[in-house]
Image (cartoon, rainbow over all chains, first blue to last red; front, side):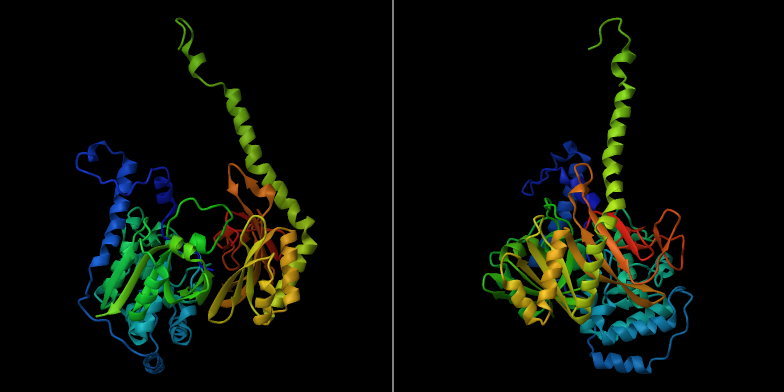
Length: 332
Length: 212
């Protein structure tokens, strides 16, 4: 199962020894005396608070993302001419590309599944991208394949040479190994969108799928949604600070009634991978919340998470502990 | 503080023998326990490990699932029920009786699964699952087992797990016994981001920081 880490370990280690007082304000007078480590902390906190501040604003998109049905996408795939091999994507064979496009319409959850990567943020967005406009997504992939560039929402994607060369040849990433269109899409997204976590590694090199190059901080995640969709996007939370919400399940239930809800989670508590106590609480994973309900003193959550929908029963205390960011999107 | 006239070198320069002893002790703590453990563990527990693998394969074929022991005392488990589109994750206290009710509800062979869990507990096996992988676009699978053992807990290196991969087919290894890619023999093949080493042609192990 997927267990990507969105905040790299190096940042955590750098921050791990700093006494974290988020109420402390950095004034102009204090800046000359601060150390490099403290400056880095300020940078991270500022970027986190930027995401936190999104709460009170809405971000309209300029151009509208189209909507279509799965049936339209299936019909289109039956009629669209088979693409010629593209020199722009040397490792993507047209026959496998078309197989992948057909998988999107038959089982979209599988089509976006990947392992041992930091693509969780992009994967969460991919589910919704395809769910809202399957025809538009398939046309986008075909245009990207033929022309090496394509537009979605307000974004023109033009992947670098390194990305085009790598797509189609990723290995040991689960079913992603045989899905070249998903490789193209995820690598292109990671190549285009950058946040403060990507400062140290901006240029893709083979193997960067599970490094800081592919990481997504909360502000970047919300920015991607605003740019890709014609939605009102609102958010609560931050990279290092949990949102202060009294009745979290009720809050999530209420937001789900009007739109799509994404959660930014501390996955190390939800899916334990080792038995040592996790001292440092940091979010590491993005999921799409599909359902939440109470059952006695427990909470049932259903979310889309790489390859399958997952239903899990957890305590309200654990839910509060793992949720660092909530993003909800409504139609304009 | 150095005395007047005393050679400064003797006071400031650390004694080289201390460095040698430290290096030797570090080497002992870093290598010996783990290497000794990996060489013997599979052979000593071969019958039980193979039995667990076979019974897991049989039960999985009728209805897919994974089992995880969540705590160091091997009392709480997480049971993942899998189907084509859904994964249900349930947590159980083995000292309570609701595990059997849930297994009955989902039509598992309750007696078989409970026996499997008991045997996993007896050899401190903390995780068992089936992993899919692809070779030349062909879907294949392996059984992945992790064992938590006191000999793998180290103050300097932290907690480690003994992960075993049971393949269905013969695998390829380099001269150092590392699992390699079938098509690119010089490329190390990774499972969950780890390089594995040979036990037999179809069974490999790794000492890893994560059990899943």
